[in-house]
Image (cartoon, helix red, strand yellow):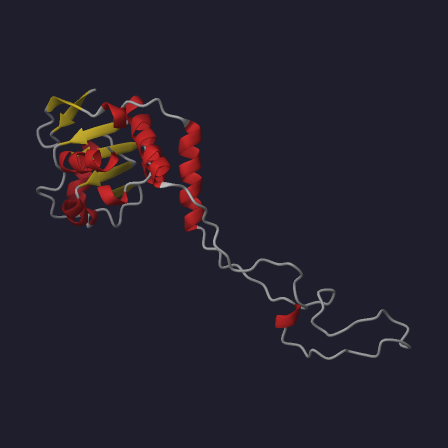
Length: 206
């Protein structure tokens, strides 16, 4: 599969060949949806909790005698029927994550990349962090090509340097190949992959 490598400084492009098994798949929504659900489930905090009847701060003794009062029978003040009593079968801390094997997660990344390239939203660039001194230098380059909402995938070392310039940008993010994931790819309009990251990515997904 042929693609073009863009030099952001000069605007020139040159052709090169991509690995077909990574970028030329027919995107499947069911695979992408399943991987995204797995990611979001792992992020869910799961710390919501309520106090049960046994954890209430009121006395555990019976509030009045069983018979002879003319009222309903009750035990202690922590019963769920009372205001500020314990909660019956309320939420407790738990993990919302579920299993998804590595082979399927890797397949999800391939389908996400194929989805971007099929819609013309994936751009391969030579490099992106050569002469930046401030955030506005990066913004100027991205605005020049109309990349308003973009995820940049860079090499492991260079991604750390480039990420310094996107900390205050809400719609522009940087990830290394190690951190690439389906959810972040799909939630941005454009995807930029540097030549250094492309080599690492092909090794990771083959």
